[in-house]
Image 1 (cartoon, rainbow, N blue to C red):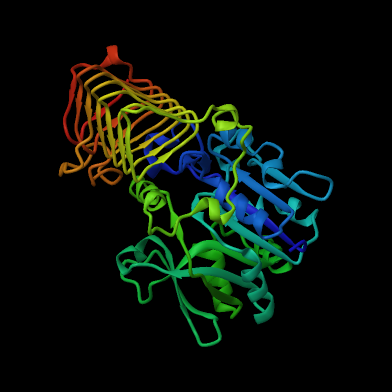
Image 2: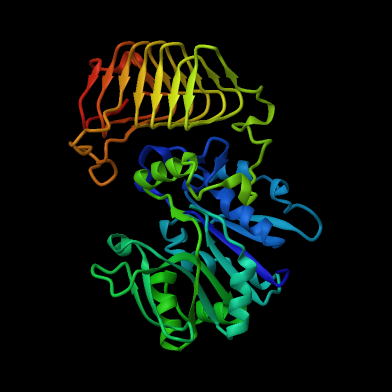
Length: 418
């Protein structure tokens, strides 16, 4: 794999994650208590014996850059190893920013050409999965492909969210539809591509097309150079609030296939927000915990069920957390009831408050496409007042402090901004 160069696309806005990406890039969003989403791609690179990787950043990159550091956490630091952060060549105009996935790679052709390789592996930084890229590269080489796309079967109702391919008997992609309204196949692109390096650089130099799925892949298909590699395993695009919550439920499902520890997923333990110097979690005699992931530094005196708690979360006596994801250093005060909530870091749930209504039928009025299944979002540094009642499909924006609430009741589907 030393002849394969990896490039991780990590610059997307990720707007469907709403307030979770208000202060960070989507790949930097915390996941599973102790990880960030990009840890999966970086760990897969490490576990596939790859030694050179570039991370293409753009939107709010500082937390992502800080997390990656010199790449030592993923064994990517050293004389013959590297992880290189590549921001856009931004000047005075918006047009200097990346216009799409292919344009992002095109703007960094000098990086590719300065590091001789046979293949370039292009990855997305916002997917949760385990994959040995060696198998895909081996397939690509053995079949004589110029471009290979990792593909997997998805439910038919989800096909409109993906690039969809139809394979012939040789594994060649004979037809391609990008996010079709009515698909003729449910074999979907995972956003993982292997290109012969010469073919990739030639394509990007002779065309100004900006996107792989819409432009580059259909062109390769017409030339007969596009092949599909069928993947069987766990993979989830966590680019929506619902998918993000579902993936966490997979994590704590005893029969689930999401198992970061077994997969060898690692994170940067020296990052400020992670449990490098946290004490062990403390579980008091009054605590009751079931089907949950409890990180280092948590203090549990109340009840936690079917939930994922990041480092430093405190659940006080007589408080209850159900079906929720609580990020670092959040406080659930005595008597509070939290149901189907995703809260960002350092949120304070006041005594006796009631947050969340999983049975809510009213979608969020301001962001109906983001929240409609009863999940409630609470932003970083928000404070829920003592005795407050917050419904389902609600959004509480970051830094909404207790004194800024117009009342202590937020009905289903409502949004509170500072």
